[in-house]
Image (cartoon, rainbow, N blue to C red; front, side, top):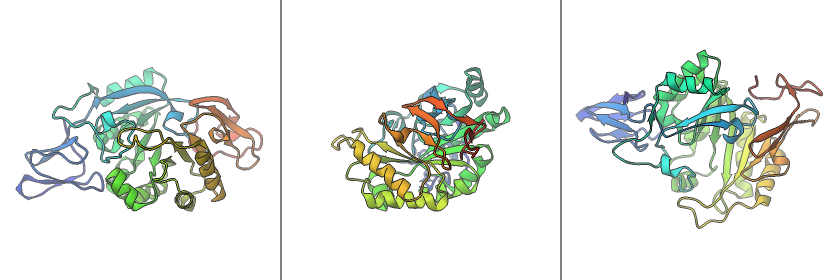
Length: 334
């Protein structure tokens, strides 16, 4: 255990957590919505600190991050827990884990850093579950990684407070934020959360100079209308039309097994909508094939990065610039 960041003490040994917009008021001996922050005698603790239930060396494209050290490997970690309750969660067995004893392999931040360095990772990804809920460990590891020249990225639902984002911002180089819908009722019914804080997080991360990519999983009948897709694309473009938007395929899972997979034509139409609304880079994910996996120069249309699945098969970049016309590709490059 580690004493948590971002909380205040209240009367009767209660505490109020300020890590995420839920701002749980937690009684003595109780836990917050995330399941891994517990009030012990008026002190809030992170129960999952250093207890890794997943650690892998992944292609950075798996996050998905396409403009962040493309073609590189990222040491990817997670603990149990999440502050959302998404009915379609693909990692529900660890994100929705609730038990008295928190599982995981014990790691110190220094041990995790050495694993990343020894395996040739160019970055550390805080992913699989929601990294905000193991913030204390992520923060300490990110500081160490930053000092050694490794990049850090969050794969996040964006459900964190300004205080949390501003604290980690000096050590956070990139983030892929799930913008699950542009409708408040979707967030309330499907995720157990609110839309506004996610939009605020994306806007704040952009203003803090952190490289942002956005992902929307298209769930048939729930968030895949053309009107909603245009709303999402317009929001992203209003911040910066060079922010990549990943539209990805849903497959029946967890508590939404009654819905069908996303049709390929719906994904490619979503890509068209994003481009029509002025976005430079719109990618299609969770299916193979088509132009939706590749990156093209926004000036001369040269193929800069060819991908197939999680593999980069061709790259025509020199220090992040198009080899043909010299235009810099927006993103983070070595």
